[in-house]
Image 1 (cartoon, protein in one colour):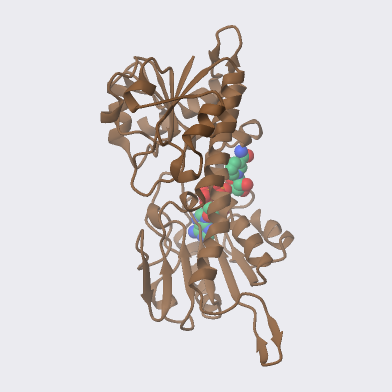
Image 2 (cartoon, helix red, strand yellow; image 1 turned 90 degrees about the vertical axis):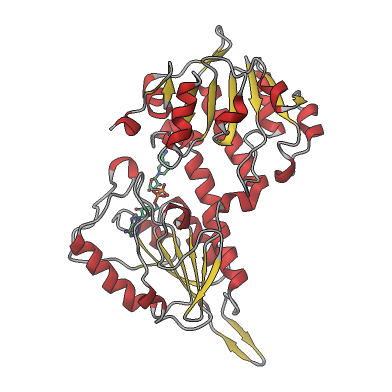
Length: 373
Ligand code: NAD
């Protein structure tokens, strides 16, 4: 069983899909690992550290030769995979909805592609879930990015020259990223409030010492939606939410938005008119900017200023913490492959529940029901 670790090709991608730690663990299972030259450079993992952990280092062609499993953070460019064996696995965050042509190309080349973002949200798969591990770091970094752009302090400070009041920070969308954003903002001393469409998050917000801001008297999602995900809300709910947000947002210094709906564009949560009510110097961080954006006027990869408020739209936020993001991503991949490792076969053999969820191509075809429907 030969595992290839590729150097990421996407612009701005600094992460890597294996670390010296996971290389060592894979070799412990009896696999051989080949790492493309410089794969870990941007995440602070040197070729020599991979070699010390038992990997061989080589060119793309060398690491792909005879590879049974190819690991990536993002899906590799199909054109860069010439020579890949029929039936070899490609295991990465493949962005199947956004990069459909790429998925079709993997099918055409006879690869078995496994999309890690399709990991089911079940207890035994928690340690394999790249969306959780990366969202956690993104939520943390979003608050630091906001603090960096904000021309005022976060905590209340009583000084001889007078008092600095605490920043008011509002988190919209309290999934994994939102919860970490709340916790981080609290640690920095901000006054934090938060909202979500899922009623289950109310208690979670309170348990972190933040104030829940919820639409009352209109049906939201009671408890959890399918797999804990949100669905699109009714027009009535959207109108009530917009009204509530309008009055709340006018009093906020910082807003962090994280709201996503799987397979759909991100819901629009903040309009230009609402931004105009914030006081100058405010900061909005839109973590959903690459999925269409929660904030009107947000631009992916840019910081724009509207009505004196900065709208931060960094792309690929986990990559801004490349070393830790890689360490967690790499462990997710190891936890996934090792959980299914068949000692006799010397390779992973997936079970039906998880295999059917993550497998997107097999036998020359696109096979995942989420892509066929
Ligand atoms: P996500 O990234 O899909 O969405 C972020 C948040 O935005 C969600 O909380 C969602 O409810 C919210 N949202 C969507 N539309 C909104 C709107 N119009 N207004 C306000 N908020 C809106 O979600 P996520 O971070 O992946 O997590 C969702 C849930 O799934 C959490 O409860 C999490 O704990 C759970 N989860 C479970 C597992 C597991 O068991 N393996 C793994 C990951 C997440």
